[in-house]
Length: 81
Image 1 (cartoon, rainbow, N blue to C red):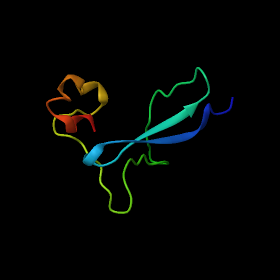
Image 2: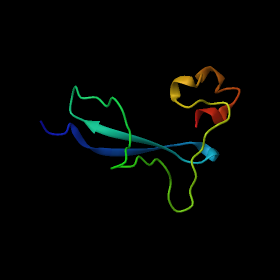
Image 3: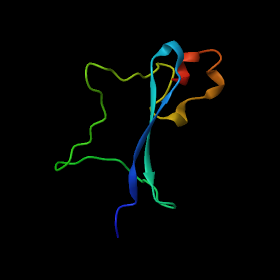
């Protein structure tokens, strides 16, 4: 069985003056899913930036999108990004 991965794609979302938000997608065969992303001693997992860029995490946010309550966006607009 071959890999269901067809490729990756990126979308730049308008974040206003807050910076840039990139959405990264794994394009899979219909019905396929990703259950985990991991690294090990033979292949490191690295999520990071290059050329001096930094990652942004709002202090009012959470480790994943499930912990972010969109009802707060009107009060803390930067949480959306």
